[in-house]
Length: 273
Image (cartoon, rainbow, N blue to C red; front, top):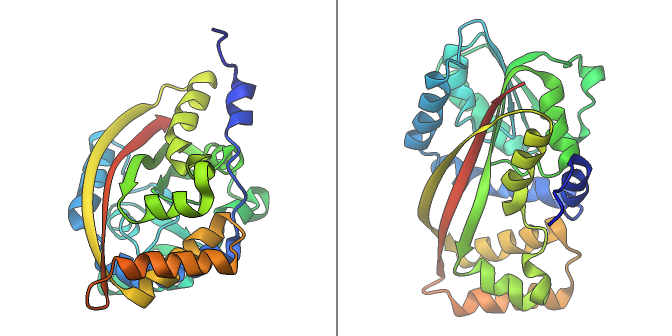
């Protein structure tokens, strides 16, 4: 079997185009629930990992890509000189700002921006950051957005994402609407591509795994809206698709509530540039 070269991995990492507007709406609507579900235990797990590598230093400048409600932004700002926090969702950023205010922090710079749209030279970000962190963010989803992490880091990079994920509602619904194409070009391949590209570039990333199971209770109308928006991120949704989503979730509701259960394995890569 022929060995894949760097160009082969780069060409292979080409997921479907994303609808930025739908993505923004999706995460704005997820912000409140996501903020309520922020796990300090998970934040501590990542922070302990970074500390064990000596990555968090008091004079460091950090970039948090897809910072969300500040799960890592806040603890990193407590230990580092400055944190730049970017997210596509204004609602997510507002929660991060509120957490920072509550913690008495004033060393965080916020920017509502899609990572893909940031021009590194215009921002003056070439080799600016001691740590570039992209934790579970859809903002790094292809080679172009991944390469930018390397370009703005002068120290370390941290990238995490799903490698396996199953959901008792989303999976069968996706198959019903998309058919056999439902599993193509999933973001679950992100770590696989990133690791092999780094290896071909001469880096030796460390990899760490974690298994997670969680349940979320939704109001029926709320989850119907979220699922519609989630489909719109990568697909042109038709009226018949909307009807399928609403009907499917209605079948799974009880007293106007829907329980969503997800089982997942995640992986994190850490490497020095």
